[in-house]
Image 1 (tube, rainbow, N blue to C red):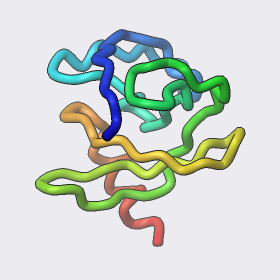
Image 2 (cartoon, rainbow, N blue to C red; image 1 turned 120 degrees about the vertical axis):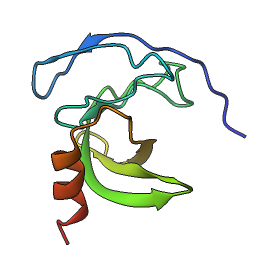
Image 3 (tube, helix red, strand yellow; image 1 turned 180 degrees about the horizontal axis):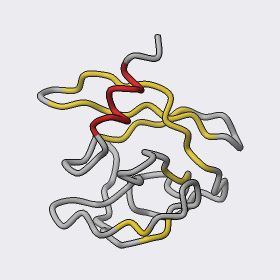
Image 4 (tube, one colour; image 1 turned 60 degrees about the vertical axis):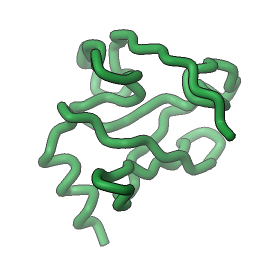
Length: 100
């Protein structure tokens, strides 16, 4: 079972350079504007991954009553998944889901 360390912090997105506010109901793990993330964790919130590459959003998948963004790290090429956030840009979500 994965360990979860709750870290909800604001940051500047390294892809689109926009300021990203705290999520306030869970841990913020990606930019709501461009949907990019950063490969910083081994287990959620541990900040122990030395890769530090950008996680490019490549697809969407259904997960329970919501969706997950599927990422591919631009540096190490590992895939990763994050649940979408309430404030994610819906147009970016739709664009990802129709890429096929």
